[in-house]
Image (cartoon, rainbow, N blue to C red; front, side, top):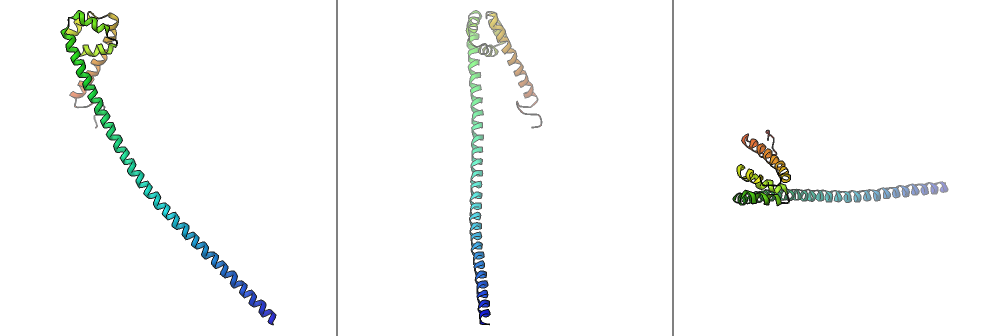
Length: 172
């Protein structure tokens, strides 16, 4: 009987030891899982912070882009205004010249668009008198540009009279 009791006791100890080992392994696994969960939670918080920082940075970049776009538009507007003033002054200067001399100078200009812009800013009679003395090849190019300018001016005037602005639809 003693042998069976010893065997029984040994078996009980073995079962108890196995149970304790399994319990310890489970506890260790649970601790590891909790550590991993904490690490993941910290990473999640860091990701949230990074997302917020990136959103703020994106908003800042977007605001700067809008400011730059507005500055670009303003510079373009100022440049167009300066060019317009330049052509008006050139038109005044050419208007004061003898038509034959002005025609020679207009013919000598490299860019027919420049010539057209100068003539566009003159009174029609004076521009016509000057065109009589301009090289016929140059006149045909100038007339093409003048036609374009006149058409664009008519569209702009029509839109202004109807209360609209360029680039906007009536619904805006």
